[in-house]
Image 1 (tube, rainbow, N blue to C red):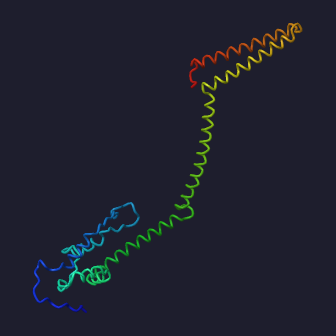
Image 2 (image 1 turned 180 degrees about the vertical axis):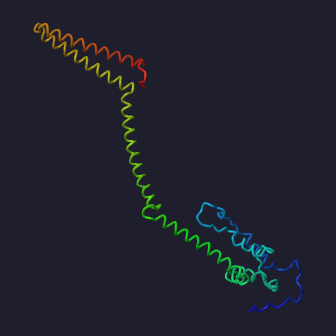
Image 3 (image 1 turned 180 degrees about the horizontal axis):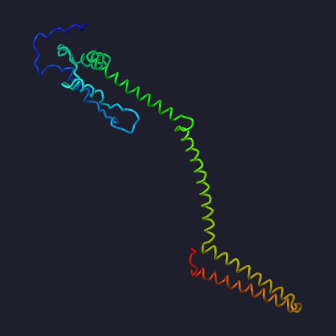
Length: 247
């Protein structure tokens, strides 16, 4: 049942004074929208079909080759309805969608059936992927758990390597020119102390040593002094950068 028509104007309305039609109002509202999307429908690496955002439009193009745009015929009396009423009609989504659905019910039914098939295919594929993921032996879940365990082991070994690396650098630092020089300085002091002990012992036992003891005492002293001179020579070479490889 059509709504009651408003009273026809008493005089004709000039074309340039006519109120905008519903089509113009719809176009004005749609032009304000900024709709962007990423089309993945051409991807071939997915195990299911992706529905293009323009899928419905393509179906309409196939069915209505002579008229590629969705046409919504309106009664002629809409020309005489006020702008406020037209806006009220446009803002009522339920009223507009019901009217469009009534005109293209058959097309919408076919589109819905095709989309349902695609959605069911996506659902079945997702369920199959889930089953493969959760399989107890060769599923992706068990493989992921194994990878997690391997990663824990890897990080443990990496920490161990870091500690050993620090120890290695500490050991290498002991081989620096300065540390080696300190080591020889210490040996020089120790050797010099031993030489002093021998001389003090010989002084205390003066006249009491037999030839064999005296000869041994002299040999020990000469050996220590020889070491002392070698240590001093090493220190001198290190100080004058004559030892290659010590930094």
